[in-house]
Length: 369
Image (cartoon, rainbow, N blue to C red; front, side, top):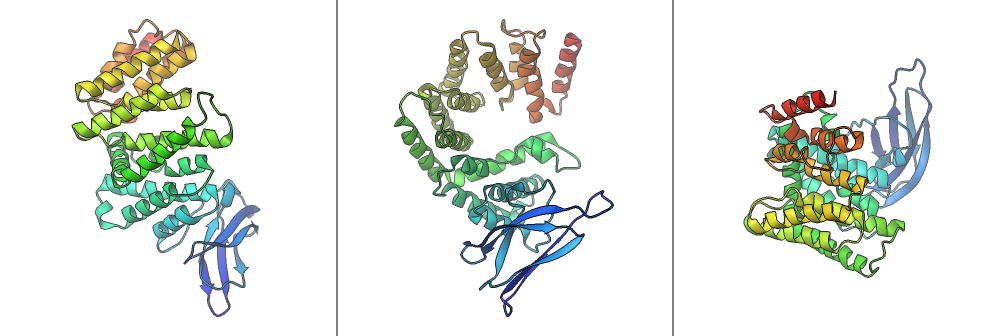
């Protein structure tokens, strides 16, 4: 709970704790305060020592109302539950303005999660959540920062496995559809901005030549560019869009000198389908990746996994065909995991309503046993 006393120019933050311990725990809570109007940090991070079941902390000398950024840097292994009347608005504000990378990411993830679940229930049209999500995404994408990794993480939607943990009853197919719908809506709304940032990063990386740079900035640039590629390739409803998406992914695949970028491009291409030219690019990339592996076991494992995780209607048939591939064997645990276990993580297709995914897994388990 929190409140601002304008007359006293003081902000009051009340924290309480619940645990299985008989006595209150000593919990270090790192907190910073952001001005609600400008978004500027008016009180830098300080650690509050929560030692009682409930404590109120005072922050005097403030000229205006503030929003607390709590548990910065994940200062304690606890689950934070707020009591704000407009929690989503607060998440959007923190996702757009917080100087703490962890809380910026956490706030964005909370917003994305809320919108995905609303989409599952058909409630998104009745809320302001899409507006908050779009605002947070746009401001995060436009950040002027050299910490590309944090920027990349803040733009990625929560994984389906993570989202499943928040549900009492999991419908993998509906969850996959809702998450995919949210990704597409974001990608469509900000396509030009995403593409511009992608091109900017591509140009910056090209200046480094063929040598793979291993400094934090370069690693972050690759990570961010691959996140942006994933969004750009999510727009593929029409023939023209599929052509554009597959060509972009193929261009990255062919021009990449490192595994990170090439595998990201392959992961997008394996889910491409439709026109002959699109399928030709997909199949060419799959074959090229296999040929370049030159028998390397670890790279071949990634080759199998990428195809097992493809979002295609006939992915199970493709996985079944791959079990007959000369390089596949059930006697090698890592190779078995790279295809069979990977397919089980492709939740929407593994849990398909026809039950064929379960039947296939049962057959594979029987063969392994």
